[in-house]
Length: 113
Length: 113
Image 1 (cartoon, each protein chain N blue to C red):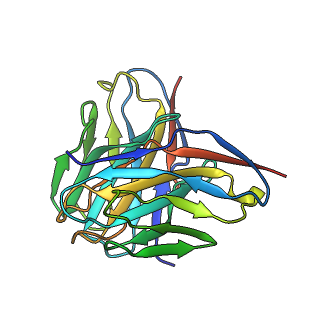
Image 2 (cartoon, rainbow over the protein chains, first blue to last red):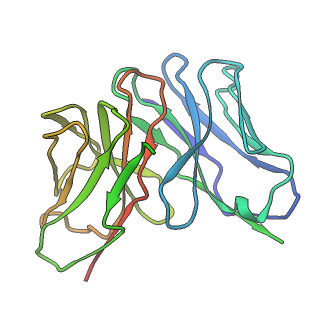
């Protein structure tokens, strides 16, 4: 069945460091892929998305490229800030006609000043 | 502004009691979902509904019930049959057609006392 695997956290970085959070998936066909972010005590917010192979999603300095060859959708940011400290979830739709999502286990990012 | 509203933000339940979590959306989305989040884990789907007066079980429906009498509302009842209800509950909605992102509420933290 479809699945999403994220790198385990927590990830601790200094401010202005480069961030990579790995995400790989197994799925039938080429579904859309999403990154969500969850700040402490809050719900999830869509960070970025890519709807087809080779698409690059970007938002707030974060980027992720949909790579069908490696079935990956790694999240990157060139220079993290303390305010980026949050939990990041990779997700994909289970099927094309229900809207249900499956999520990775989440990766906690802590950025220190 | 359009969005999803969950209430209450914090909820305390005594053992043996049923409690109902509210979820309202004004995005005109057909589909709504309930997820459960436990510490250090991803989100697990409890129930979902693609249309008024219809809903389906997700991966962990035991001990929960829902209703969908209005398009805007999808309340979740945590019954006394749910043995470990303490968790963070997230409601989401989306357009039914596949490949589109879900929008989330701010969550309800339920604690059994």
